[in-house]
Image (cartoon, rainbow, N blue to C red; front, side, top):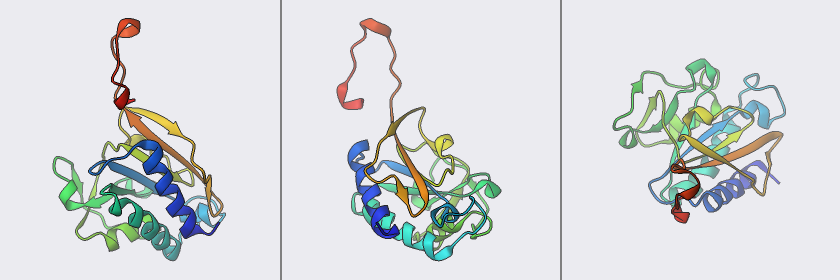
Length: 179
């Protein structure tokens, strides 16, 4: 399956399996080096980053899902989001490039209407394309998801959704719609 189609299929699958609703946030970590079969951070590819960004953005924006792009470790895994979603978050001053931030985050910064970088978020779900470690940006209880497509190019794809923590022990009753 080609990279663009795989990205679209994965995004739709994540929306459905995570039960994402308009206004919820997804975190995307993407190593274009891994997509091409190279070691993470070694051969960033702007064209691949833009292709994957456009494919994911088309799915998430059509559903009203807020997409955030995780930068690489050189930028302390800062996130690129639309400014209108940054209320209450700490904005940091950086513009990602393919060599410092990564090609996917650079594509997000170049294509969002009014992008900003923030130091952290707590997303409702996430996609990790190529072992970028998105867990620090997910809400407290993450639940792994099995997606139909497990690779984009040569990169392994993992996904997670989140849920509220259970409290109360064995006698407690729970709201099944939150699970």
